[in-house]
Length: 307
View 1 (cartoon, helix red, strand yellow):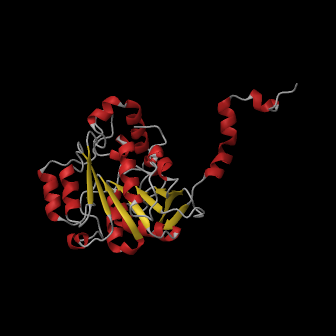
View 2: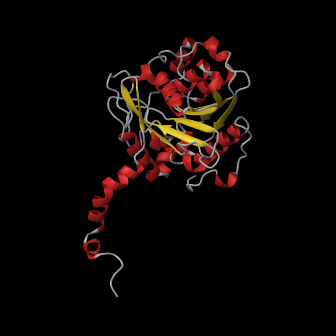
View 3: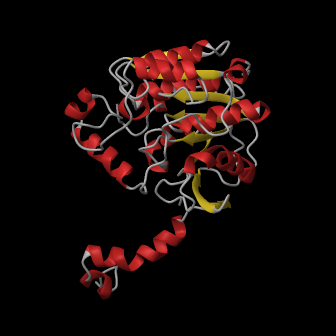
């Protein structure tokens, strides 16, 4: 009997076969980008044709992240939500030709939402992503169904909060090296070296220099505008977060009427990454109450099997 595969395939090592077909695979799975404000913003969409009509969610990553950061969320969310992830300007596949990424964060998010024609969108933001998410929700509350602010208070123009941040010793992300990743708790780095290494690789894919995050978000809201926010808000803090310590997140939740706030024990600055099961439960449960009654199936909260 002749073998099923032609001889040329049998003769080639696996790596050569993969290399031969890599361009084809890349063309099949290539994700789109939109031209906006002088750059191309890379994004991924689990239902680009909106065939299923599920409530849309846009995920906004932190400074050490990119679209890949949400690998423990998308498999859990996609059965009940249309999930959109993107590389913010200056991260991985989205260039920052002008070198002032932060100034464009809000406009870039607005352009992406308009491009995809998302109605009743929920925004799930981690750390830096909260800058654009909060500002957009304040500016266009009619377009936003729900807002999740994880390990962030939005870094808007709130002098008292910036001063408190200094007083309690909040620290920037700093170096990305094993044992000194401020974005992860010390215990997580000791106990889960494989996931710590993966986190470093995701961060390492980003472009240099990093966005300048030392001050208030340009074009961000005022404290008065945040106090008037009517969009349902969920805040998530990490008990051991050194970048946005929990008092800052709690204070932020306290100025928005009706906001929910949860502190996750044992987690640092990246609850979504360190404790994805708990994060997914909190967020999916919250969204189920504010996006058309989509019910939470806890059996698939974390399909990746990561805890």
